[in-house]
Image (spheres, rainbow, N blue to C red):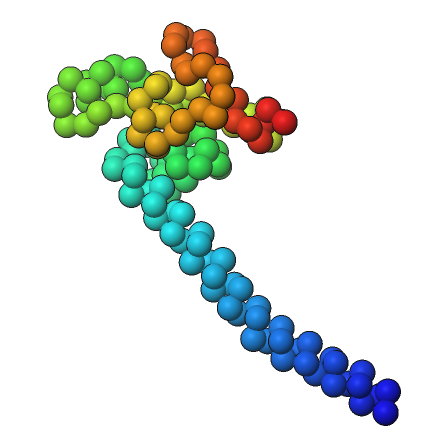
Length: 136
């Protein structure tokens, strides 16, 4: 009798996993897709130097992957003066303790809808904002 209980338990567990895992995977993929699309659509245009367009997009959206070559200030000024686009510069070349150090302007916070939970906002060149995950 105990043999049948054990086999029944294994059978129920196997069937439960067969049903649950695809549903959980689908839910996880949908959440990731929703987050990725939301972040990508809030970034209308990314400009960079010659190289991989996918690498540039991933680096600009998530600060992952190899850092592209530096974009010259003259190019940024030319684009800004043309009125074709607003330029928000990102410098994300260095990492420390697994976190990317990102240099940008206050306008980036507005574009992403970011706000500080505590502390003072960026006021002058050299000010630093540290995320909660890095600060702890």
